[in-house]
Length: 248
Ligand code: G
Ligand code: G
Ligand code: MN
Ligand code: NA
Image (tube, rainbow, N blue to C red):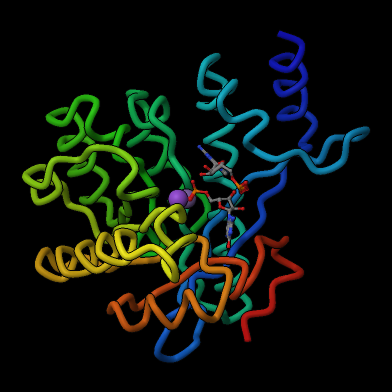
């Protein structure tokens, strides 16, 4: 409860910040977009990881106002980049409770309108569990958001249980291969097979694939050989404040 009160206050006091991590196209080496990741700049404890407060925010429902702040801030930054001549698509994480919240579609529409950030440059990252919990309802929400023009990726792909039939029904644009499969890709034949299968399936369904958690050149070499065209991870850049990003 203390944490909940503190987080609520942090939102009011504007203590949250977004960091941005580049997503890189393997062939060109260019940054094709960034993922926004929230942090809490705690006056006493310093930078607090979302792992410490997102689960609680989900449980208490605070994730809804927090999620609105994240969307607003990401779109504001994206618009500022555009005004500075930089076209930078942004992906924002949406957790299950936010996705199930009836107001998400209106929120996204309102935030885009007010910020002037183009819908086509916004990707919402959803987990398999968020959309598979009530798949029929999820399809409707996704279709409504799609009509606005936003894109979707499935985060942590491979760790949940999404039915392939649904994957085809959902208007999804990209799969993000969970970093657990990338971590051991050099040594583990099974992980290589999983990545290669996901890449092949994505190609069939005309989805793009982003490998997450790429930390070494050796992992990148395997991912490239397996046909993975976009990567994200410490090898390319840690999540950083907008002003500290180097787009190369
Ligand atoms: O950035 P990493 O920094 O440690 O993030 C840890 C976890 O928190 C990840 O699972 C990530 O998806 C989640 N996360 C980070 N930022 C956000 C956010 O703005 N909204 C939601 N719902 N989850 C986030
Ligand atoms: O669940 P999601 O994929 O949104 O979470 C992204 C998380 O992964 C964040 O915590 C981010 O800081 C972290 N992350 C990003 N790149 C790397 C990496 O190369 N290695 C590891 N271990 N974590 C990473
Ligand atoms: Mn993510
Ligand atoms: Na992920």
